[in-house]
Structures are given as C-alpha cells and as structure tokens.
Length: 321
Image (tube, rainbow, N blue to C red; front, side, top):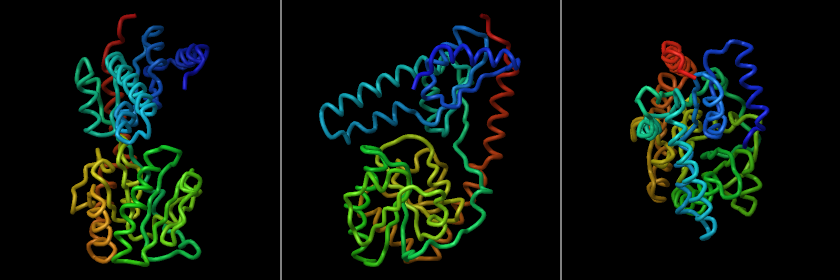
C-alpha cells in the first residue's frame, strides 16, 4: 500500500509543526518509499520498525507454490522486497528487529551495527489475567490453533497439514480429542472440512474463552517469518505449546523446558499426546513459558528497548541536509 505523495508532504508538515526529533515508521515493511521520501526531503532521523524479515516471509512460500506461475510471482515479490530491505536498512537511522534471528539478517545489510536494534513483539500481560467462562458445549480433551486465515496463507497450510497429517495420528491414541481452530477467515478458508474431531470457529471478539481452557496450543507453521504472538499468548495463559521449529523461530525458548518442538507429523502428534496425557509435565511447560513471556516479552521490556533506541538517536548529531 502506497500513500499519495501529498500525504508524504503532510507527514513532514505535522512533524515540523510539533518540532519532532524522530519519525518512527510503525509499518516499516511497507514504508520503504516513505522512508526514502523523508530522507530526501528532510533532516529527520527515522526508525524503520519491522515486524519480520518480509522477504523471508514471502520467499519461504516458494516450496509450497501450487503452480509455476505462483512460484514465479512469489520469487518476484520476494526479490523486490529483498532489494528494498538492502537500501532501506542502509538509509534508515535505525531498523528494528523483533528477534535476534531477524537482527542477524539486517546487520548484514547495515552500514554500521548501531543501525539495527531489537524491538520485540510483546503482549500486555494485564489482558490475560482473567480466565473467562468455558464456551458452551466445549469438548475435552482439546487442542487449539489460532491465526489469521486467507486463501493460500501460511495459516491455511498449517491447518490443512495439522488436520490431514497430525490429527489422525493423535486420534489413534486419543479418539475423543477435539481440535478448535479460531481466527478471522478460518471458517471460510476451511469450509470444505467436515470432521467430528474438528471445530472451525471463525473470528472471535476474544480468543481467551478457548485459549484459557484448552489442553495444548499448537503452532504448526511451515513457512512465515517473525516473532510468534500465538506462542506468547499461550504462555501468558499458562498453556503448553507444541510448535514446529519455524513456528517458534526468534523466541528465546528451549525445547523440552519451555515448549515442545516437532517438525515431522508423527513427532508433532506424539508431543501433543504427551502433553494431554501427562498433566504435570504440561503444567510445568506452561508455567515455564509464562515465566519467559513475563521476563522477556512484556510491555516493560518493549518500553526499555524503545528508550534505548531513542536515547541513541537523540545523542547523535542531526545529519547534513
């Protein structure tokens, strides 16, 4: 999405009117043209706030393309985004990374290491303190998958892999286990599924009535990039998680201590079974993940990271026009 050029000028006018010191582009991955405009037409210091390495997000979809045309489209979009990331990281005063994994990528593009700073994806733990009532007709034992769905999305791929490759393995041992899939677009994208062990709920005003009452939260992502809000949310609710390696990428978690990591369908299924049947172990993993979220992915952590970035920028001289 590109804003009209008059909006670019209006942004600078607002910045001038309030005597701004820094312009912080919160949607950094789609703001490269705006970044270039600001640096060409002003002396403002600019933070490019990324939510992922977007080129990586795009290009990881190549192996999952359904046709040569789709593969070519993904490659084109991914390489175009790579080019933006290269010059954008060099001209932004700071590019933020949501994890050390992402920071390593941007550091290879930056002119100096100080141009890349951690600014993690976090959650407000106050929003997860209250345990809501269980939904009507809620089935136990149960597992949970949440996200935003659209046709061809990473979440659609994750859900279909889970339903076709993992759930049959789980139900061999636990025939009554129930999978709840929640999130915008899920009921549309997965409307072709009819399975007694699966409920596709669709969009909810709040996921907490489901998340707080499930046995295990699942993150079976096979392509994507960025820090995982769904894992953080599960940790905030003391719910144990089974994830693919990619699904937990960038989070400072340890397999077997804070989370279970599994990529093969049989391993993913067995990990899920272990947590459903071993309540003490599941409780320990949920508590450990909650501690990680509280210590490393809370609002207070984000505030300190933001302060570090601004202190660095305000201590630097204004660049020559």
